[in-house]
Amino acid sequence: MPTLHIDESLDLYYELDDFTDPWTASETILLVHGVADTSQAWFAWVPRLARQFRVLRPDLRGFGHSSIPPADYSWSLPGFAQDLRTLLDRLEIATVHVVGQRVGGSVVMQFAHDYPDRVKSLTVIGGPATLSKSALNPDAWLTQVQQDGVEAWARSTMDRRLGNVSPAMKEWWISAMGKASPQVMAGIFRYVGNMDITALLPQIQAPTLVITSDQSALAPVETVRDWQTRIPNSQLLVLPSPAYHLAAALPEECAAATLRFIASLTD
Image (cartoon, rainbow, N blue to C red; front, side, top):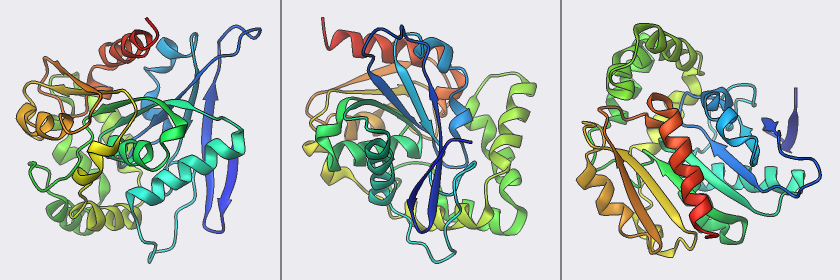
């Protein structure tokens, strides 16, 4: 498996999909998954992206095939962002187009703030700047994970995540997310309850696309627009859907919008 040794607590797993013409110098898109996901969460995106771009998909620290840190590890968005920067350094990738979904969207906003010279464009799909004004409830999730396990948490939240999709699709995502480490989930839920990067948003320099849905009870459009407009060079795309996890519920629409956005930067 492709892994890189990042530090004493982390061997980072990643996938690098490249179906671009080998005689060209192709740009790279970095896809960053959310909590309880892995690099496999982007499976429906890869066919749409990998003919035009090299597609880099890491398993974030604590998820998938990447190392689970000690129980006392201090989770933070800057920590995730630093892991991504080190990954790019080790792979000798100077700049990327960055896409993040859910808390992965929060991670990539932090990354774009901390390492502006590495980011050509930024796409955020359902990535909150703070959870204090949303219907997301990390404290209740923490209790549920501790009492009933990660899969029970995934099952209880999946309807609001995916909206109107097939039962088979919901079961696949429940099973996939249910494999996440309870220790990792507990640590992250303790952290994200107080997460707030609102003050960083005006300093993000990269052209930014924020994608949200028009019917999500977890992230109302007004809440998303409130923080999106703080990013100077940003635009908001609202898709018709009750889903919060749009990158999974509407992968083709989101991937196509991302490609159009990146193309518009060079028109």
